[in-house]
Length: 496
Image 1: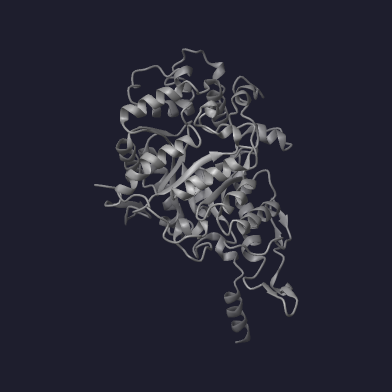
Image 2: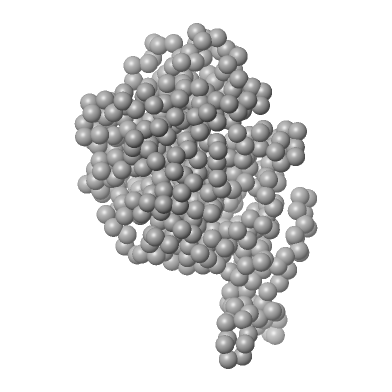
């Protein structure tokens, strides 16, 4: 049974809620504004151009490639410090030498140029609630939402690197759950700025009277909270979406709750879909039971790295060829940043399936149970690096078009997914391969769009189908909205 034929029953609020699998999956390209992302060392490969990440042409060429192929978005990760745990403390050497997410530029500034040369591609930009003021962030995203005509999305993160904390004046990171408490209030502030500071009809641009905007329709927000005091008003007039489309990627207990409350799309990562399914069900259940949201309004996307060619054999040969370009030391440096664990402290022969650290055991056992031919092999540092170098902690699929799409379809069915964040080994090489081999097979099965039915829509409409481009009525941020219609209704009630 194919993914678009199956009717899947998901348990939400103790009831079975059936829905047809999506007839068209959401596909994002997953990148970073640096020489290397999840596959370190491959900047040297002839089909890779990420060493040109500082040039605007690199970004506009990539955006046009993806837009032409009907990708939904270019999803850009970001970090605010170097990966310096491995062989540390505070040793940025292995990451810097391979260009592994360092050096790194701000991703938001690439969006206007890419938007200018594309029609439909949305741009998911990562920004932190821990080290930036909500007043300043709201202005930047409103500016880019204007310049992209509503095609920007914000990937909300709380940051996870000690190196970032130190560079923002802290001795160590803010405690994990405290970061989410800060983030929750942060969202209240930006909702008030984006949704509630300017009334819908504030801006009139009346040349005859010389009135640009009605001052009585622009107000302060008077936010006074535990973490932020922001009087307002918002610096920017309302953009097409007001609030940018909201991504989130936290899968801890508090991260899931935050996503269920605020996110419109959630990025999940794991080695096997069965484990992801538990997280997906929890998020949808929280959205419905705790926050009164339609659980299906949250689009869930899994991260995956794909190596594809004409046949399974050709794909394996491609993987072998690619392998020589990977930087294992940098892969272990990335692992150190993601987990906080310095693997240099362990011997080269240590089998990490049996170490006393549950975090490593869980990750490695997931790989040893799913990577073909590896069940009885020792997962030491070298083997760990061999796996990490092809896309980090997420899933990896290698094969011809049918093999790859069979696996993607299985993930959709098992984990209850709406689509994928497609990571790259080479950029643009991996995306060119996906466009040549994977997308036609998806389209043949009715799993991906052959064209964009309505051009020039907002990021929110592209994901949700809502032509208004605004937050859904059951979204927590919508209650802050200052609507001209709602204001008129209030006036009528007062007069009555």
